[in-house]
Amino acid sequence: MKTRLPLRREQFHETPSTLLHNDYFHVELFRYPAGVEAVRIRNQRGTVIVLPFYGQMVWDATFDGHSLTMGHSFKQPLLGSSIIDTYGCFAFHSGLLANGCPAPDDDHPLHGEMACARMDSAWMVLEQDRVSLEGETEYVKGFGHHYLASPAVRLHANTPRLHIEMNVTNLAGAPMPLQYMCHLNSAWLANGRFKQSIPQDAFKLRTSIPAHVKPTPQWTAYTDQLARDPQALQQLDQPAMCDPEIVFFADDLAQYGHEVQFELHAPEGYALMTRFDSRQFPHATRWLLHNHDQQVAAYVLPSTCRPEGFNAAQRAGTLIELAPGEKRHFSVETGIL
Image (cartoon, rainbow, N blue to C red):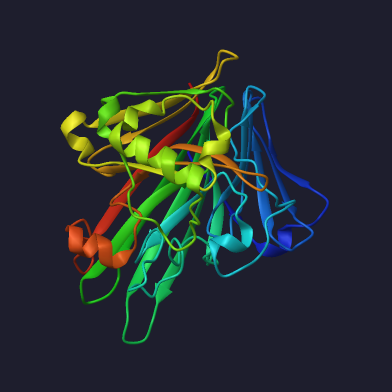
């Protein structure tokens, strides 16, 4: 049996209030001082904070005492029109009409319009051993695209992982372009080692340099080495070399099976993990950045295409086209192995 509890913005205050408490879950509603509504969901293994009306970002996630979230400079989520206005979350929805870093010939915002979308509605769904935060936002433009986005975050009882989902329905009478990435900003684990179900040599270094990357001589020499031998970077033991960012791409994941799994193993004996269906996400990105302001080891970013902008995906033939009324579903499981 399912119980649905609608959420209203006026329920959220700076003093947290309990929405649900039982043997498996504790759910609190609160509002950050900057005005952003948040839902804190706890199970026996950890805590997840989701922003129900702000792109349904997962602001923070901690399981078994280990933070999954990147190091950043934000004390709280801040309202903005672009993800760079609040780049401190664990996960956000990148897309949906365009994805990734816009190239000079693109006109879309960084990581698309969905990342900071104001949600029309949000609600909790309670089941026997699972709790979900769900929501909807309808995107519509005169003489433009029209779609319904329905994201969800789900936690099971006594499990150190969460499921992040996205459903997209084209409501227009014309085809709709679709690019989507589940953008997981994972913690930098010092001396952590990568492991995955696909071959190591599936990852290739990004050789293009986006406008926001300012190469140094040291970085250029190191990435020249990685271009020749991408497998040389299998451990997070040279953080200074990851400033500016280093990015790898893996394509055509379906050739390695329907379910693919990626891991980052810490020397302390635990590991972060992410698994997904390669039929939903045929591409994976690995994004590494370590400086004074950000420390992130996004060991895998599942996506429908490379995050190099709309026109690059169109040229590469990886831009999805949704027919009128067509729906796509995406699901990612991530947390502690």
